Length: 369
Ligand code: CP3
Image (cartoon, rainbow, N blue to C red):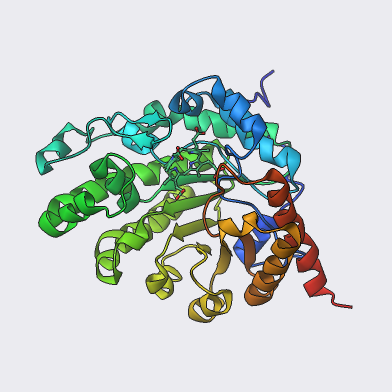
């Protein structure tokens, strides 16, 4: 038996809806595919119910729970992709750091990196399958459980964003502690970023081996860097990750998968990001669709970028905003999404209105009557 055991990354069900993958690869699609960052989240009552049972990172370590949470939004909305339920902070945990989820406060590191010497406390060699095997198992189980409905996206935080959490110890308005490292300890900063880069490359390749069909790299804290620091401390690592992941996938005879980079608030670097080796550039809502298109040319697919807060608007208004966004991006080489994740107080009904508006208007734009 066991040819299609839910925990074996083989004999996956055939993919029925490849619209998202085709758009990501720059192929033609008959409508605009759509998914939402944080589509598995607290705005769903069923998510709150499942999550209430245990601690956040215990949930992340349970492949069964991750699978269930990943599938929940797909039962409600005709989304064109699933994203594995997990968190970017599992990578600092794999490096040996403790991270706890404090309700009302968010993720917290009881012992953040303070001095350069603290780098020695990190595991310098990480056995990624050992430390993060639970994510791989969650991906394999979810890919089987999806029954080929839509593709499954894997993800990781990017080096600068993870470094900033590891030094700040949690959320921060200024990132002053982490940026202090960049200005005062540039060499040690590069050492940490390189360590993260190497773990992230193995982690992403492992996700593809486990069944992920696309990968998204979250550089959520890019906006705290200016163009100069982005060029020095973020972009080289973002580039290296695309290059090394692709080389390794090829060397290990794994399928090539489209890669998405979402560098929030980094529109100053859009031209450079478009040439960083990613098929798709994720955009936040602070850039106009036409401007993003002009600045990236037709080399890449764009993804985004409705202001998540637009979902607080009445449903008809959401429809109008979606229509304008689709007109701005055009019908091809485009994946609709929000410009950042959904918030816990958002209405599932309005999320449904967003998804439906993308499908309806994007078909209409292709065959106007
Ligand atoms: O998008 C998805 O649906 C997939 C799952 C996903 C989660 N976190 C689940 C989660 C993804 C892709 C992430 C990535 C992540 N985690 C990022 C990058 C994306 C971004 O938002 O910029 C970041 C910065 C984190 C760190 C993190 N984890 C934060 C800031 C929080 C919120 C804390 C809070 O209390 O508001 C988390 C917790 C978290 N990760 C939740 C979810 C659904 C909510 C907490 C819960 O379920 O109890």
